[in-house]
Length: 186
Image (cartoon, rainbow, N blue to C red; front, side, top):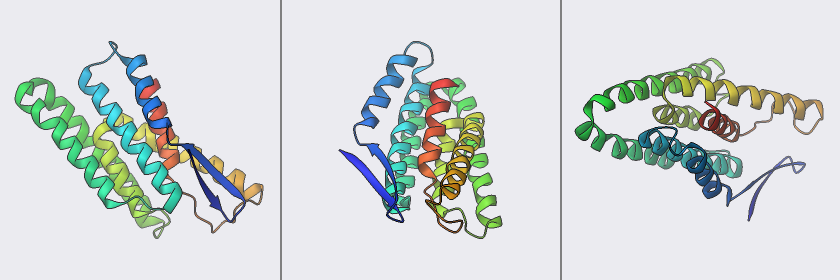
């Protein structure tokens, strides 16, 4: 089954629902044995939540608060046992996660305020929550990759007259591609 979203009845985004389990399985196969299980779990969760955010943003041009709250709850449930059983390993991970949260949410909040809400509030909250999973370096990487991909796509669509300068595009799919590239290649 495919999700299709029309922009001005001319341009369509498509994304298969089956992509999420396939991507998570690919992550597990590619990265198993190379990285710690906790980092593998963090990567799998951010891939799953990012996929849902991308699909919802394409369909409705919104990222629901419930999704962001679920991301935060899953992160807390993942980190709490680690703090009790492996405190020495959890503290650096917790520090990196908090810096990721601050940089991901902070940069997007700044852009949101400067651009007079040209960036959606859901994107700000999603990137802050994703920063918890990605850490400082991962959050910066996703922001850069996602923004570059969205800019190139937007400029191309404007040049092809598929969308106008004032039209909006969902950002979460581009952030998701940035998450994919960061998780698989960083």
